[in-house]
Length: 413
Image (tube, rainbow, N blue to C red; front, side, top):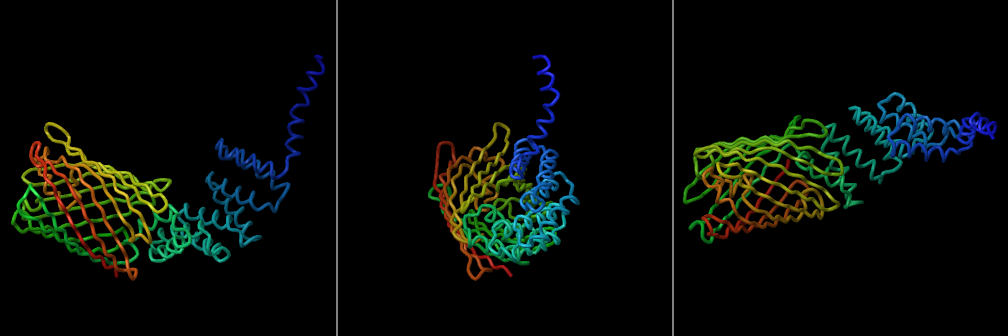
């Protein structure tokens, strides 16, 4: 028994190697995928892929996967060697084109990535993955009109594609160099104020290499007093993941508008079509009001969900505002129905931001519901309408209703 045990120990490694040597290329491929995805052991998975390819040198799926493993391991030259061999032998291989284009895209070679995307689309013009990657590459190259065309093609074939929907919404304003818009809101109060409010705005947006810049003039008649406000917005692109929102405004008509306003938010495009935001808003009436905000958004098929909070500190407490907004897209990025439910007052709402006067924190308690419709026609024209109803506590234990009807038009050129 003792000698038999020693013989087993002696020959066990050779038995393992023999068993490994009898595995088929498919078996080794499956082991490599399990090692990579379950254990994140890329060196081990690379070794298994190499062994599989020694048995089956023209096994294209394994060679593409080996190229991806090298990409994930930052061995870009080795990845290129494997993937170019695939596309040389099989120029119509869709996975090879996606893998090679993705490699170049994530290594900031978007012009080269586009070449391999185009090669793949020549053989697979309806490929969802290639069209989506093409849109991302074109966005990185700031060729927004072509990117929008790729997304439109994808959404016509697959309108519930979540990733395409998210991209379409993000670049809708980038498809034209210029944009002008005009809108009007009528606000009626059944108790709080005797006279309705009238608000109107005109703005112009210009796309630049760093992002969009908007100049806006707001007009209002509140409390039987006319006023005007100048505003500027900017959405600078910081990276493929981050972009920002900047706002500044001024008015001589304090009370109708705050004297100064400013805002900043940092946005992050997150995996799984999520988007996160954190920032602040500043309003100055007779004194400063600081408001902090955070939101999370999620695209899912034809829907967009957004949950946002505004927190306004005061001497005694923190005024809280929460809102849930949902859009249902029935067409492109400018074709949707919207529904909103919320509590409190948003400083981003030009109709109500004046109610956020620093001395009126108690009056911020309210419940509101809103609905909207937005529709594009002939590509460059957008019409929208919004309706909202708020039940506002304007004195302790005294509530009134506020009705807001708004309409607007956008022209891109």
